[in-house]
Image (cartoon, rainbow, N blue to C red; front, side, top):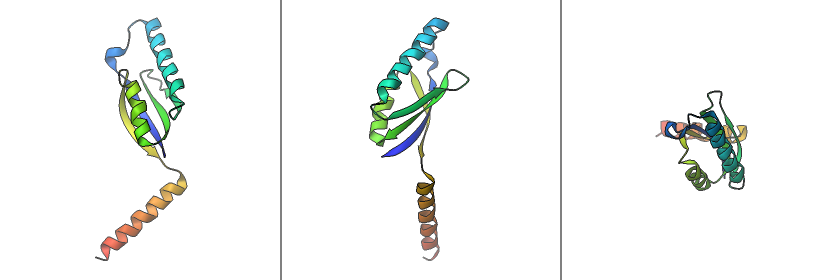
Length: 106
């Protein structure tokens, strides 16, 4: 199980020009996110641009793909990054350093 930060952008072709329709679309996406909490979405938000944002997903990567499929008609995924705890990052760093030393001794 992992924790992921997903950066997204609303697809230009689905952005309504009417402000009321835009707000309805954002409300609909908000409802999808609320339903997504059962799947592992723990947080989401819009950036100041009002067309870009993020969500945090906790679960298996395969579940993340399923959650993404739900948003595909509306969002372009710009980036997916796994979020590590300090302990996980430290462990990965130590393993990498150990592997590098082993390779130098070949």
